[in-house]
Image (cartoon, rainbow, N blue to C red; front, side, top):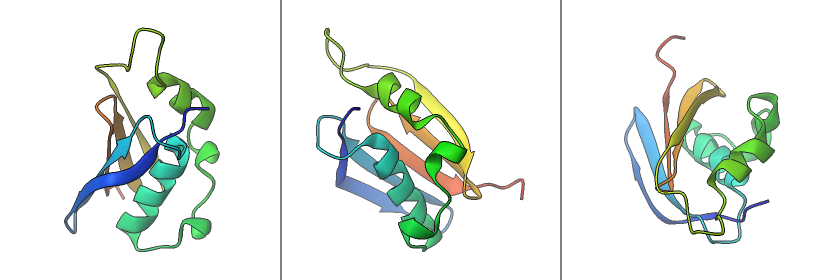
Length: 102
């Protein structure tokens, strides 16, 4: 599993929360995603449904993990989780916004 952390920087509004995670840090991407959603929703991360109920967390980790030729330079994944739309990019951003369809 790739280790990552969300210690870098973040931006927040009432409609969107964005955090930059360290793709070479020591916190798994799946944990960083859950923490970003919890922060945006004003909830404790332990109150959220497990991320793996929504997306294959291992596949998410593998998609953005370092490769033999370096870090992935492009691509993103968008999915719904806990009433939010979450986008994870290869640039190291986790963006969380309200699911406007609800």
